[in-house]
Length: 352
Ligand code: GTQ
Ligand code: FE2
Image (tube, rainbow, N blue to C red; front, side):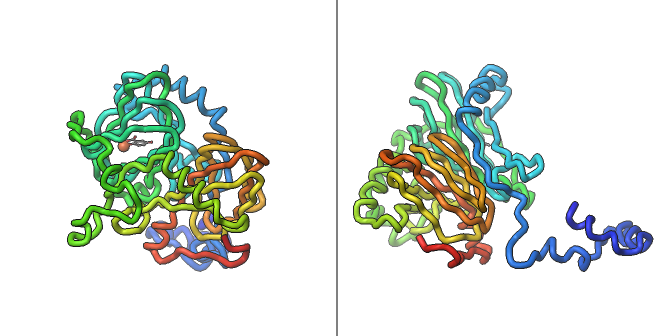
């Protein structure tokens, strides 16, 4: 609104006041704030959240916020450009969540969709629609909109992960609400979707007759993703990205409807300059250290850091190690943009 009102000064005050009392606003003085020339006006800024700084604060929350009061013990990552809105980009909610041994983050469901990416700890289990999913470092676990979910911790030490939610979008369309439930009964087949979709290219036979389910596969184990990236890297020249998308194995499309997830490997010393895209991006550093230049700003990152790039940004990633590989999970809003018909890729940097 600041943008809109800032340019209305040129109108006679009396006219403007009268129009405003009728709950109307002249478009022409501020047309370019709704339809900017050439490229969107970004409020989201490139930013990195260092895990080293946030981890002690999250552990402190473990003392300050008992689970029965907190329901979810989460530090939200708030982009400094978004003026207090607790979102990482205009479409991506990121939160660092902690549960302690013996705790349960109680069962609930909501219209917001969520995905967890595990950062540290052993013995955590998230139960999604009755299916128990073990949580191991780097794993990606989908909690679809509308599905019951709860998190339990049967191990030792803190269990920490990054939540990615489409909350900015679902809240923005006034469609977000939550329902609390009683603890879930677990099916006798934990992690069952792992068995059903053990190998890409093979799906349960009845998929062909019934068509694709929305969320057939809930957990993508990091061990498999990492091995797939390393295999792919073998035949991939250095100027091509080693980049795999997490998809619905029955439809071949993105694994959630609003946010997209993919895994990137940067070989030692590798520099990657992806094609400029209209989507906004977030990254979780699963392993390694490097830097990313985003719209001219350099963000330095290491394991467990999280960083973001606004829509339409020019992005360049570099692995700063000459020996170690770096692995990033990329989160973007390209699925939503594709559905809206506004997704674009630009040819102004070298293709990847
Ligand atoms: O774990 O169910 O970061 O409902 C925000 C809302 C996590 C969750 C968040 C949630 C959850
Ligand atoms: Fe939730």
